[in-house]
Length: 243
Image (cartoon, rainbow, N blue to C red; front, side, top):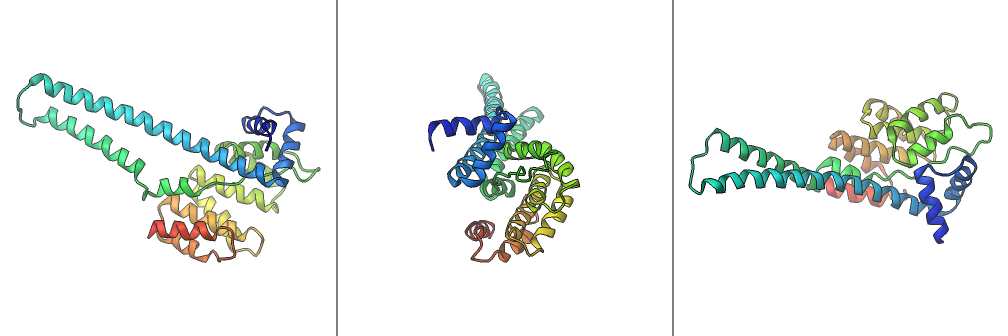
């Protein structure tokens, strides 16, 4: 990729391209594997940095709680009994520490979900006669704005219910925003179908169960993915993490 490609990709993700430029670049993404990989990498990096920022903020808060508590203890310069005030201080620090452990715990399901869920970019502008909500749905989904993506995909699918990539994207978006009932319904319909996206339906249904905390159901789905499927290695790795 050339420098201009990176610049244009950044503008695409930021929604700064004109309609014609956006459509042309979306077409390039569909046909150029290098661009697809770079797009996925940037989306994953952005998601990681957002999570890291949240964790760093929590660490600062925890550090302040710890410093304030032990600073007060040092002022007394003597051994004191653990009274109610001391106890509440210890509880606050312990609670913050427990939350930090949860965020860094590699075995926590939400963390595993974030690690393995990396939706590829979608492109809905492949039909010249279907434009309504397509660009908005595509842009929101590819930028990771799943609340907006869900709304636009819902509107788009009203007249395009046979568009499986859009349906899969809506199932993923529904999972991301916690609409598990609809996500399960959509992803099951793809998982149980006989299409080129069956494997994707199985994979994202497993991830939906993982995010929801239904680990055994997630394992069952992962075990269904055949070795010939491009998700097989990831499914195998996730199963090992869950066992």
